[in-house]
Length: 131
Image 1 (cartoon, helix red, strand yellow):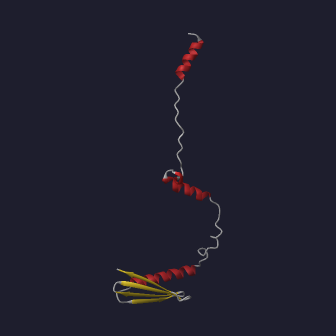
Image 2: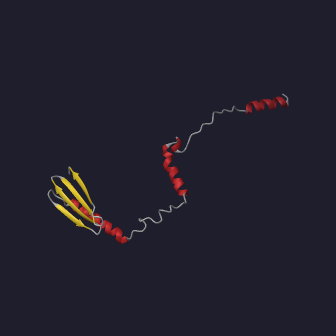
Image 3: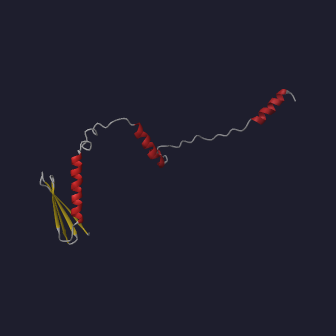
């Protein structure tokens, strides 16, 4: 066998068939039809790269509340909770804070809460029945 034939036989044996298919686009972002489980991953990546500050957030009241204000709010919440827990049918409770007057009335299975704003004297009434 001559060298040219050997080369052709070697190339024929060494070559393999190549297969190909169409390119298929699969979106990643769930907003564009991708897997919904990718949403949290993509959001966390975006938030970790976000270095912009919200200008309105710097002057927010959440950052400026003092420990005394938080304690006062917590104490008022606790007192209101105790008032509601101690209610019995036909009883009433009263709580006065620096900003509000709260009257709680319980009659015939209906609890009525009257909240009066001390600055505007506007009264809000909340009625809950079936308790």
